[in-house]
Image 1 (cartoon, rainbow, N blue to C red):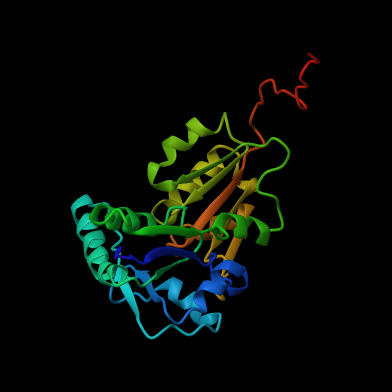
Image 2 (image 1 turned 180 degrees about the vertical axis):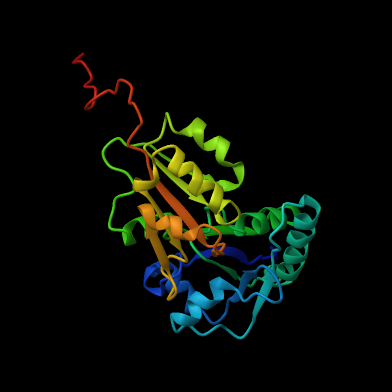
Length: 258
């Protein structure tokens, strides 16, 4: 008899508003035979993903577990955390149980899901992996601001702010919109940079998009954030009106008749 392994399924929940959970994710969350797992940064920090499903009125199945994914750039610590998470999940998968990994935002975009999936597949290649796509925080934030993220042939760069302010200057000539994620450690430096480059007016800061305590600041309002503590779940959307565009091909090229 062929051994049947369960599937690891990344359930994208959107950035915070339970109304943004997709129909596919909602249907899977109704299953009582699956196991839920969800990430948290530490034992002192509740899981934001689990908070979203609770606010949606969704009850967990009989078996569910929080997995710890520490916020660190230490590769050894991260590898140990991923291995511990994989060891916790693997017995369920080996028993043929599907495991739903709850993820805020989109499971395929800067999410902990990918680390767990790779670690588990290194253990056992027969484990099935599925990602249920979801609404990304920057898409929801842009919509909440009432502005398109991009129009016509605009170019967009999505960049973790950890690369530093100097990296942004290299992007400005090529992109009409910069989406800066994980901006918490660099807020003051980013505000200074926006002012120096004449980009403050077209910038917007969104914190905890879709959550009950969401905050947003536009233009000169961002100056009030200097020296203030902001959530890890924060981003900046920067419109760059200074970009000089090169030649563009307009319309579609038609094939010549044979």
